[in-house]
Length: 116
Length: 115
Image 1 (cartoon, each protein chain N blue to C red):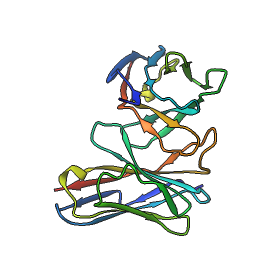
Image 2 (spheres, chains in turn cyan, orange):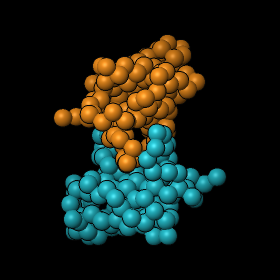
Image 3 (cartoon, each protein chain N blue to C red):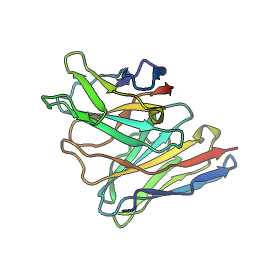
Image 4 (cartoon, rainbow over the protein chains, first blue to last red):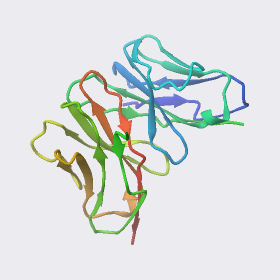
């Protein structure tokens, strides 16, 4: 079956522009997560969704970052007025359930964002 | 304080040998889960193995095993019979509690397997 997909795979933008990154989770997965991976670093949690609500936005770096999810499916991460420090790979993951003992997160291929 | 610490930026191992990648964690929550992911140069994150805090036995998945020492708060990954295709970044991650599935990642260890 189809895995998590993300688009675009690469995005180059100019400083100050807004960007939208899209994530299509695995069908039926109720939980969706966004992470950021700077070059040579581990993954940083940004936000997660349970259904269409976001119980934990604690990882969003600033108010320039926002995310939404509709129809318990597609999610969009928006970065306004991009800065060079926003350059990173943005990874989306989904899982079947939230909480419990064990829920494997399935990751998408990521969107590589470069802010010039 | 770092929640997940991976002290080995890079490791080398010869093909067919075993290698241990270190991971220590810090949490006060009695319920947590520990994960290992592999990230090849292509960038995708591949789930390898999971250990729950209440699991009595160390997790094993094929050539991967997790050496879970709860009192020491360590969860080292052991790869047996290394293969050239094992060359990649390896990340240890933790989920705290049961109300959230967000993962906290370490900085990773780059493993290189040589013939």
